[in-house]
Structures are given as structure tokens and as C-alpha cells.
Amino acid sequence: MATVLHVTGQVLVGPAEVRDEVWVIDGKVTFTAPGSGHDVQTVSGWAIPGLVDAHCHVGLDSHGAVDQATAEAQATMDRDHGTLLIRDAGSPSDTHWIDERDDLPKIIRAGRHIARPKRYQRNFAHEVEPEQLVSRVRAEARAGDGWVKLVGDWIDRSVGDLATCWPVDALTEAIAAAHEEGARVTAHCFAEESLRDFAAAGTDCIEHATGLLPDTIETFAKQQIAIVPTMVNIATFPSIAAPAQEKFPEYHKHMLDLHARRLTTIADAKDAGVPIYVGTDAGGSLPHGLVAEECAELVKCGFSPLEALDAATWSAREWLGRPGLVEGADADLVVYAADPRQDVEVLAHPQQIVLRGRPVLAV
Figure 1 (cartoon, helix red, strand yellow):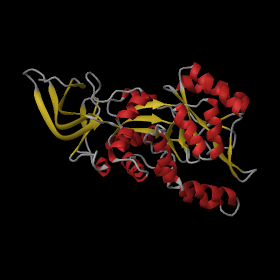
Figure 2 (tube, one colour; figure 1 turned 120 degrees about the horizontal axis):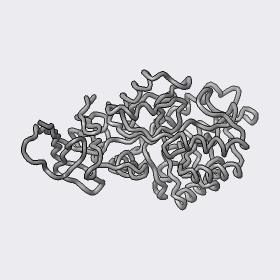
Figure 3 (cartoon, one colour; figure 1 turned 180 degrees about the vertical axis):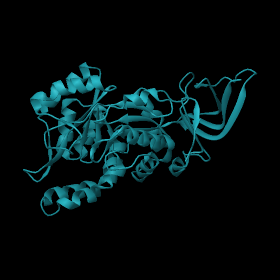
Figure 4 (spheres, one colour; figure 1 turned 135 degrees about the horizontal axis):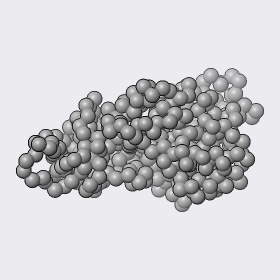
């Protein structure tokens, strides 16, 4: 006898669409009740599509690539906190084996980071010069799942501060090449000038985007360049900058300034209409399973709980081209005992997690 999952209560199909039940049959979502002859398991509560972490690194820690057991633990941690779809924004590990695991989150990969030599964290990236950028972008576009990740700025020790990594003409050619390969481009950018360069070159997305100013906010809104702020990562800027205080005082001061205005920066971008999605930057120095915390940080930036939830579910899935709770889709959903539209703190306490139609243990 086939087991059917019946989710009742408040099924949040979209920001403004609520159903009172959904069925999971053969791992798929349906809104049509099954006939007789099924063993029915019922779960009640507030159900939403599986959370999205749009900036996550499975297979990476602060030293570089990790072994398979560590990558599995990272993916499991995300899953057990309700994150069932990950955009992996750069990893030196080949994690395609996860695609064969029905019990681990779905991953959309960006290949490996692409950086200038000695201008990013050691063991993270392919390090190339501008004349090699196009060929490397094409290779990573083919290795990934529709995304390429560039490092747009980093500390330049010769100037003692954050500085752009690529000439605009090289960026423009590289982003065009990614688009020819069917991939979108995102970039790590902390500072101000790299944002202007990437916008001019036609990027699709920016990670962090702490250097947004009124002119670039206007440009990003006009071009609909998405940002994934990773507020839980930006919160660590003072500790990142502290070791450089004596040797690179301008860099230290710059990082503290970006940190101090972080909430206002993202609030202004939101108000201007810049698309914003939830991402945590887990896997470098941060632990996995932080989407609830990131949503809470967005609320501090002026998002309503519903807007923060949308940035981690419905709109994020649409942006990434993955379905939510729609007829015939894989049943990837999380059930809570209270309404996350009213309080994002609820997201930290899933009552039940269902991945590909299979209930998994909640934390």
C-alpha cells in the first residue's frame, strides 16, 4: 500500500496564495486528493516551499576543498534547517555526486571561483590574468549549472585597500562569453568601484554589494541586477579587517565603513527596486544552516517578515528557475508550527521537512 503525505493547515503556495491542504503522492505535489487504498500520513501546520540559500559553498571550508564526508555533513546541515535548494556560489570540489542522493538538497553550481593571482583566498579559485578570463569563464560555465562566479574586488596590497580585479573590457567580453554559453554571471564585490564596472559589463548578479551608493543603486534597479547581500557574513567585517589594522589602515577603515552602513545600504537598494535574495555565504568561514538568521537580518534592513520569506522561497525559486509548491513538482517543503509570514524567527524551528516527497528528520 502506497504511503501518501497529507499536509493540512496553511499551505503557502505563494506570497498571496494560501491553500488549506496539499498532497504528496509518489514524491510529487498535487492538490487533488487520492482515491482509496492509500496509507495516509498527515502533517499539520504552515507549509512553505523548501528554503533557498542563494549563496552557499558545499565542498569548501576556510582552507579550500574538503573531503566528501565533510561536504555531505555541510549539505545535511543545510537540509536539516529547511534549506532544500542551494545556489553554490563557487567551490573547488566536484559535488555532482550529491545529485545522485535523494536525501540531500538540490544544488545549482557556479563552477569554481575565478580570481586574479594572489587576489583572493588561497586554494579557493582558479587564478588567471585578464587575457585568460574569457576561456576560463567558458570552462566554468560548462562545468556549472548555469552560473559563473567571479571575484570582482579584494585587497590589493600595493595600494593598501580594496581594489577592482579586472579591466572593464575584459569583464565585458567575459560576461558576454558566459551568456553565449547559457550561463549567468555573479561576482564577489565588497567595494564601490567594482559595482560600477560589473554593471557596465552586464553582470546578472552581485554577492555582498556592500559598496552600493545612490548612483549604483539606481543603475542596479534600472538593469534589474540582483544582489545577494549575505548579511550574516557582512556582520563579520570587523573581525575580518582587524588583523590588517596596522599594516593596511585604509583597508581596515574601509571595511568598517562598509559594515557600519550595511543596513542602510540594503534598505536603500530594496526601496529602489533592486532584486534581493537570501544567501548566507556558508562554507568559507561560516557554518551551514543559517538561512533563518539571514532572513532575520533582512528584517533589520526594513523587510517585512513576508518580504524576507519571499526572498528565501517563492521569488528565489522563480529567479533560479526552480518550482515551488505547484502541481507535479517535486515535493520539497517545510512545515512549521507557527506562521513565518508574521515572524521569521519561526524559520529556525521546522516541524517537518519533506525532500523529494520523503519526510526527513527536523531539528
